[in-house]
Length: 436
Image 1 (cartoon, helix red, strand yellow):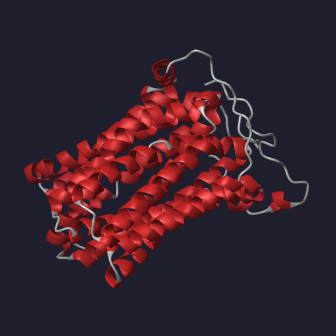
Image 2: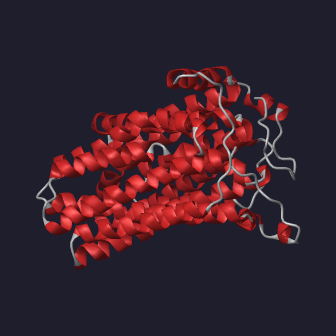
Image 3: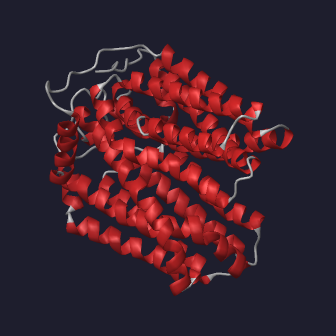
């Protein structure tokens, strides 16, 4: 087991709830590493786009590079969950950062020297995607070993806040400046340097022994154990089944059809689209900040599913309005409620999944999202042309509401959350898993 959290003897427990995880040295280092890594990833994502363009690549070439990253992520994520349960979690994250440093550094050097080719980028993107598949399960599984259970919600809120700010705002903004002033390779080299800072923070964390897994199990046997737990655990299966359909219905319209809604209904251009999309990201950051100040809701399953389902309803407004500000307000609310639900979900996994299974269950969660996102985006265009963009958004906002009610009622989630309360104050570290 990785290191367990220490409880301070001073009065730091009176800190505001969002700041309490920072009492713990190991979490401070982990959060520092996460912030640096997300910032570097923001640089990487934008630099790769302009590096493809600099090599005379067009949409097809950029799509091929992006697909290579997604394929690497998808084929590796389930194995990443097994690794997070079998190996020291900090060591797994160290390995991921090392791969990121090497990949960004190689791409940057080749780009600056003029030796980079498109196939190089595709291979590097595949490697980075495959490595990143190991990060999320390990990160999710290490948090309960560093913090008391009642501080996990705040810690997940910190991660939910850092991601849009560092990866989707600050990193891309700096990359845009560097690409404009120099060449994309400079941004890639800087990303490698910032990934190195993330690695240093991980090295500074104390190591601790890992709880041994059952001897003699193969990787496939470990994967099968994770799937068995999923199918026999009602609240987990219900949530992932709902999430599968939610991703299928929601992601494609937002990613593919939103620019056309802005153009055709609000007569807006690129800056207008950026405003509406930016409102979604700001809503996500705000939701993560707000939820980190709360206790876990008493009706945590019902609240989480309704936040996702009913929280998507404002998308209906995008289908019926011609006002840009209404579109921006709608995406803000969807981003806000989605982020709150996501923070609750991450905390719920860490509180109710047995520690020896947490990496694999987290990877299954990640796999569901990854697998359905490209399907949703592939279907969004044809559906939008068939039904029209406005009607597609009306359905994208309405259908998740019915899915949420079906999940809550069909799997009797209110009874489950009453039988397994998680809102009571906890003073001892989460050394034992709750039996779901």
